[in-house]
Length: 125
Image (cartoon, rainbow, N blue to C red; front, side):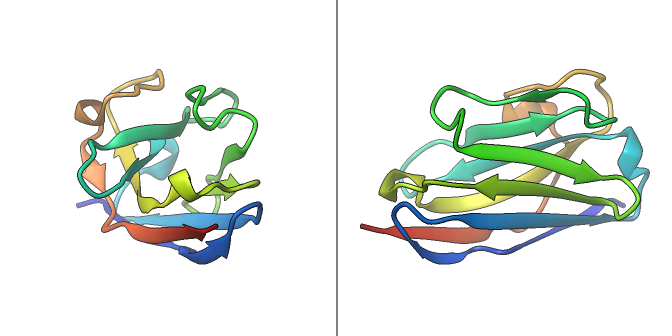
């Protein structure tokens, strides 16, 4: 059973930076497409970033492009999300997710089979 554990969330001022980490265990991490999602109160879960198995391909939606960077260390079974120039609208619970079946990055939560418990990011104005 794959387990994902996020860390690194917290309170940050607008314009600041934050680095989230997601440690995986119980599976073949290097075989998974990994994604970061977020969910704010009353809103649907939103795709934030995705990275393919090797780390050579990444995808970001326009809402965060240029401000976030996803990376992975397959030797450490960990995926990261670097967030810069954060805005109050980035406030949400951030989840990492693993897709063990696909070779390509998906943006729908339905593509991902395994999820972490989430970490809260709060951006103050």
